[in-house]
Length: 430
Image 1 (tube, helix red, strand yellow):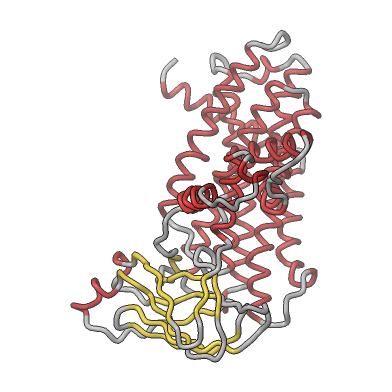
Image 2 (cartoon, rainbow, N blue to C red):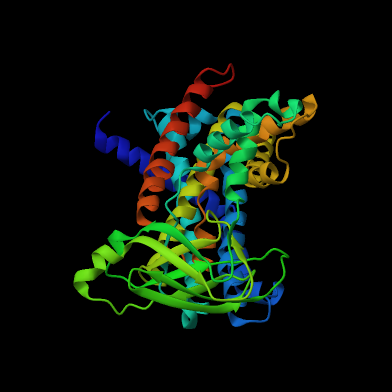
């Protein structure tokens, strides 16, 4: 079979699946529901009363609601696509010979992903129109240059084991459990800066030497109450002053009055903070401080965020198609939706229910299953395009290229091949 014939057959299956979804009125209902959500959301959710708070809520939950609706609708359609025809013994009639089952599954995945992309495009257009007066450039977010949390946990573990006063029950605990606990602790470790004292953190900002910089920080104190914060940030000859309250995220622009010859060397090094207030301040270096470098426009950031959402949809639809190839229609749909909800909640479950040093078998099994789901879903859960959009953080192009290759191209191909393999080896398959 020639390449042109394969492409024609692929396009034919693509159009058939698109028309099937369109004729079922599911497409129209999806567009209507998404549009209604985008328009009515400001009347449903209430912010903190500020324009900034309303903007953040709308940015985060408008496309979020549309994405959730699209994911459930399209994944359910994908899960029942092959399962329904396999159960009704009419899968052969759906094939355009001599196209293989893998091409059939891949074309249907592509059609459903295209429908999801249309839905997100319509919703994003509404979002762009409704927020057109609040468009701002986005920022690259740089973290401090620190050793990894796992490396810090290993060092802490060695220090604990060397302590002669360490309780015996902890000494005998499973090392993997202790390492996980210490790794989480590394993200919550606080650093204190006394009145008149200084703190410093290394940032690698060399490639952003020609762009405006800012500091984003959140301080707290010993008593976890709001208090005045006064101090000066300096990064080379760049400086910025803060006069704010603790427990609130502040963004402090750094003065850009430097010579062009100095810029490349001054943009890589230590960010210092001098505490000019009366109280000791604390922050978590892995969570509470970032260096920001100005990136491009909101419009380009919105496009990149949509590409990441489409990539997540593609991976979910591909998985659903595979489940439909091996399971019954209702079981496939239920399994797919359950996996989606568990995958989304897994990271929160793990953080809220850390490993106990002593636990019964049920606890251990539940945590092990949750960690397994989290491990599988981590490439998707690590993407946060809507949060980035709401916080004016840049959805990085490198990340978008990666998920486009993996989630939009490779995963659908892999799950299509697996779907064909499963169907071919089922007793009632083709």
